[in-house]
Image (cartoon, rainbow, N blue to C red; front, top):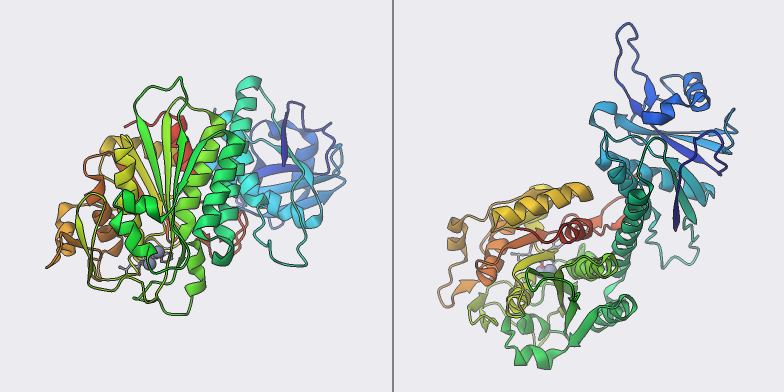
Length: 504
Ligand code: BES
Ligand code: ZN
Ligand code: ZN
């Protein structure tokens, strides 16, 4: 998808479709019916205003994702005018704009419209945030997961132009648009990895894809197998891999610009379970096919590294992906087995299905050994986080208030929803083992928290963010702004955090 900025007024723009956001301004005094209004400068455009005035409130109220398509709009050069509801004017922000832009893309594509112009609404005083939101929203919406349908209609958008009116800094907007394209493309790169079934995305195939991408964008990338895991004494990671006929892969990506200071060094660690059957503690067959996306955390880190390499921030970043299958077999680990992690801690594996925390324990510990001063991990870690937060918010945990504060800001800029969960020391009691330093599960209650507490034992005092994306990595049904399938959650927040300089 090509993107461009246009600084022309709306009336003379020649385009297949001009999309304009309309907002619900609420009831006005002496005019009880709420009336949709075009936001910002476009409100001054007589032609758009006339179309709006010709519609009844029932036809167009400004409700979010409401669409009215007008052909040959009088007074405009555009072939069509799409009026897109943006919801309540009072609460309209970059978050809504991102989804509204996406909804416009998903509405127009099946109609054969491959290029259109989106009239930028005024978002307070921040046109940069508006441009980013529109472009990112359009990329998210453009992604089509139906790659294996033989009657697939490839409906990629060819081009999107954002029409900007008013006094704005052209250079800054161009730069924001370029950034947003990189982020949007990287998010879709991650989604394409997550979308693959496990027979087409084994640990070695995931490593191959990461390596190829790294060559393309100029990242350092090394890929290791079981021998290296043994050499590093990654007993926790190896214990998960031992049940599978597929070789595990430990992927290390390095972004080390010469002009970056020695510190901070951010370690991005991803869970890359390319299929999670549960192992000997096997999962029920119903829904097991979904466990192909248990490598979403790893794919997020690969996509984030891609974006970072292209955006070139002056900060060092390591990407580590622990990729393996979790399978039952005669060689698989069994409940009750004791494993020694790379850190030297002993783990009693009560449930072989709690494998994500085992691979992350070694991945995070290794990141620290390689010099990471700050850590972020992403993982489809627990069913419990889905019980707690549903499919709306990702679970976020942190052992450092300052790092959390900076990440929270990044999350807001990225328009991603995450909800903080606690890490009180009291929860650690639940992991106490009779035979080893800790068990890998903490019982029925607070499962997302005990999983995070387990990982925390390997992170110790290093500032750390843990993202449990089990409920948010896969969109369960088509939405106005995004197709059912892999979401690419967390990539944008991580990249925003890095671009702002990895602060804590
Ligand atoms: N990969 C699963 C978690 C998961 C659940 C991801 C739903 C995506 C959607 C993880 O490895 C797992 O099986 N966790 C167990 C832990 C339990 C045995 C303590 C779970 O959540 O049931
Ligand atoms: Zn599992
Ligand atoms: Zn898993």
